[in-house]
Length: 262
Image (cartoon, rainbow, N blue to C red; front, side, top):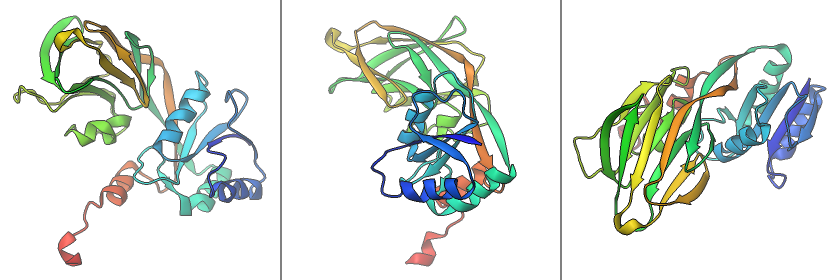
């Protein structure tokens, strides 16, 4: 098995991963420019490392496993102390591969998002964002910004502003306002077959900030965007015994009674 390994070279725990890879007789290359010709990819770090790995992989659709050496990460679902068992499960074929939707962004910014696209204010003044779905006008959000999240990204920025947590196998987009002025506006979940359009209006003709995952750029007043399902999918490795719901319980401490600690 040939592995494309993505990690910060200065990560002090990297040797633990490479050691476990070597013990199983796998070949690997650290941070290749393309994942073409590899059987699978490993991301070792936090969610930022995972996002960078997917971007470097390009259109190649080999499956990727995330190993978390950061803090609260949902994309890198395998904990650092589970590296050995995870490698053994890979060697024995005891894993499944989940296909997840990617978000294609066109217009004032272009690219593919694993987690989300956002349009946000720059400075103190709120912005307005006109939202359309499949050619029909939906609403105008007066807010600090708007997040359009994939199901994978529902546990990222979207969750922090009150968006729904969605199982990654669900084929949908989550539209969530950031600090909305019109309080009757609520997060909206739509099928990922929908084409979502956004147009931003700023006060005094200033700029706004558009982001695609962890990349950002400034855009002019009146800029429009079109969001749709990308042709490529993200293929995520899920080792046996590691589920999305287990990750939720472990990382969000669901079921833990805080009263027992005080």
